Image (cartoon, rainbow, N blue to C red):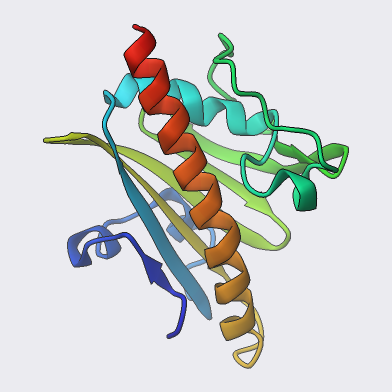
Length: 167
């Protein structure tokens, strides 16, 4: 389907993600991924900050406030925590956490998992989004998610690579 994959390998689309347990028969499934030239622990520390802001298009989803660029020493998220903060308020909920490896959450009716994988060039940050929606609505949702998720992953990549340089 148009917009269902960006930056991922076929092997990554065959992995089992935490979100799969919450939506066993999705009508929408999308995968996004980036290679990050930083160690998995550096990427995980940056990913934890998604709780503070969306790290996508701040003008659209953060009321124009810039997502924090400085790396903060946040604890790992726990089940029940807000997933992110967007449009001036907490959005979504954390559903599962495998510290330093996977964060699974729900937002706007979708379930999503971010996985940090070791890679020869540093790390892979892979996102899977699943939902049950009307089949005719799925293509539009996929394209919208692609635009926002791509920007988010590229921002997290750039920041984690900068964090690595500061170590």
